[in-house]
Length: 152
Image (cartoon, rainbow, N blue to C red; front, top):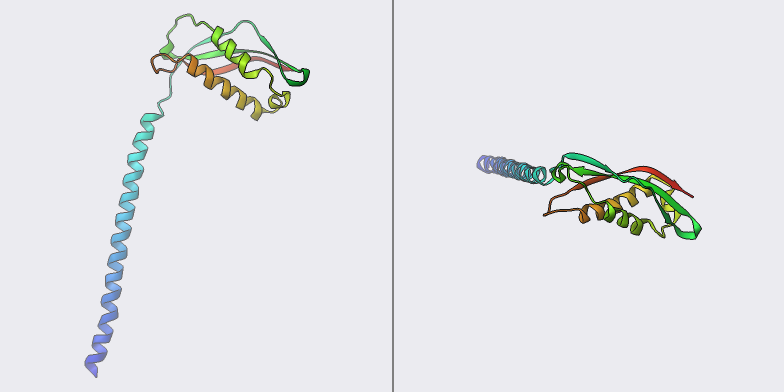
């Protein structure tokens, strides 16, 4: 009878010990795998998010006036923030002007009433301008600055 108690007492100890070893190994493997994935992904994103360096600012001298919906209008001026890769060459701004007219004409004046709305529309225009002025897959325009902005 004493042998049965000893065997019964040893069985839970062995199973608890084995369970602790399995849990410890799993924690080490999951932690190591997670850390490895974090550092591998972090390295890729750091290379992919290389910000362009600011270059010249090209001011567009004349303001634009575009018709909005319901008899309203928008009068605005803007400048292009070029990248360093664009160099110091003279920039033909006519394409940017045309894209601005196409993007803003016919919009509801309420879209321009809030900062969020203006930022959304500016981002839309910037995306089009960046694409239009891209050379050999290199970004030439990195931002747009409003120099005047009036709605009525």
